[in-house]
Length: 408
Image (cartoon, rainbow, N blue to C red; front, side):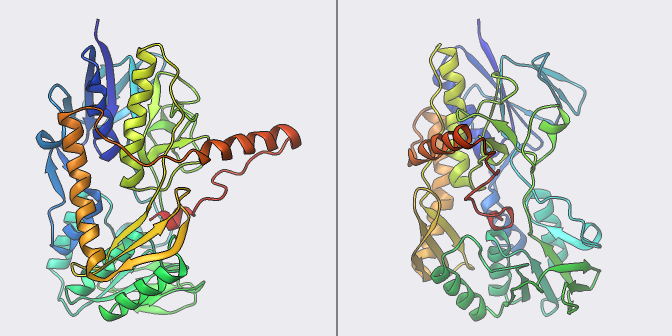
């Protein structure tokens, strides 16, 4: 009898998970995604600027036998082992992989919902591109958010000749080492991008033609692009499953839901031991593979392995002709070494292409994806548990990690 596995979400983590499950012939895989094309999220800033379409056909990245259902999951019925779709259909499963990804959270800043343009989905990027195409190139554009999305969007538009102001809401590139941060600031300046940092560079209100900062400054803004913060769909929470404060599914170190061993999480929406990894495709692909391996281990009556993922750094595109590669330790802490200039632009473009190539390879040969591991995470988890046991101290969620704003 075939084992039915439903994967919710057709992003980087979901596609890898669906493909890797095909290591067993007795597993039937259904992938549910709201749209019928794979979105290269790491290229959405290029779509907005008109330098890439940021999509790939699922036929190119999904393996033979994976069933694609274009729909949205409205609710997970864990007790009934099924998911309810927005269309009214219901899919039953033996195992569920939760890979819904992430998005910009709803902002409470007045005017953002009406006049802000996010750039974290295909539809939003298309909407922003249409608005920019209809706006005079000399008109002021404001990008809000000092993380990767904000930096890359501001650089792409600056290189295209737009008059851009980047409002960081704190520090530029919070993840970066100071040396890398200075290099990014220098490149943005060369592109004519004005960078506003510090406590006062927080947005207090947005209108159709202005951005008001916390310190009272008013910036003229014909188009305001919102790239601040981190959020995930609330599907897990609405379905009665345990989540962290941001809405990510709480799991153990094998990525298994703390509520149900038949539900496994991957990618941005997973919070193993309430200590999630940084939002990135660098994490999404290995987490998707490890989520699938957890399911495969259970089917083989074997003990799933704890998650292990070693980071190498962060790649930023700073327009089409420059970039920055910030090196980091396996623990994802930025080091004082970076590569800038044209070479880093080549590296970033290569990474983008190889990410899709990795999906294609996994589709053709399930189990082919490899990644850097980091055993120190399990030592940290053990040390933290020992502290709890000895002192009855409750660990703080996200301790030692970058802030949610930094992850953007």
